[in-house]
Length: 282
Image (cartoon, rainbow, N blue to C red; front, side):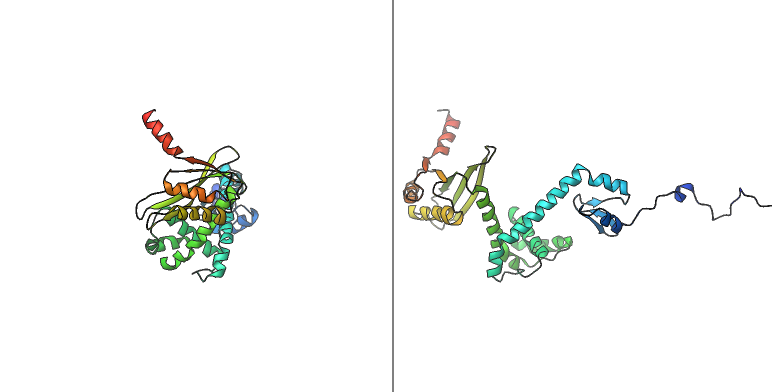
């Protein structure tokens, strides 16, 4: 007699395990959803756009890639990739004509070095301290180099910044604000202003020059012409106004650049006048 209701010990499996869904591996899911920035990381499915692990269940993955957060992450990553390619394009002339450290490395490594260099410069961190941060930053997976060699890539970032401003003001009417101090070892700044399509005022610092001594009017004019006409290629008809302090050297500078920019309107001490009226009410 065989008891059909009995079971041998060790052969019984709970229903939850018997009917558990069989999920595919992470590599299979990556191939199943191409172009969604899914990768295999430490044996698990990882979303590069959202920067976290995703379950292997197909329905969960489908819901994830349709979410607004994933779409925004993809757009942001695509924009960073586009900016990285533009960065290499803007600095290609410098890299080809010089023997800067890392100029022959793969694009991915070079872009990572430029990104790290730009970040610490924006944060105001001395480049020499990159040697201390190097172990942390190399944990990302890309190799860096010594701060001395990394500083050779600064002109690449400069060329990219100039190209970005040139693109922003190309074909637009602009005004220029310039001023400098009369003290030794102070600075002269040149700022251009333009209006975007939504009538928002856009400002760009196009030059910051440290002076060993006070500049003459001719030197101020040379700096303006070199910055506007040569570096940023501002056409004579596109510079419509200047705003500056009424120091005598600035008067000389304006008279010197008028033959090229004949139609500009010279506004002297306008900012100072507004500040005075704001504080005094006069």
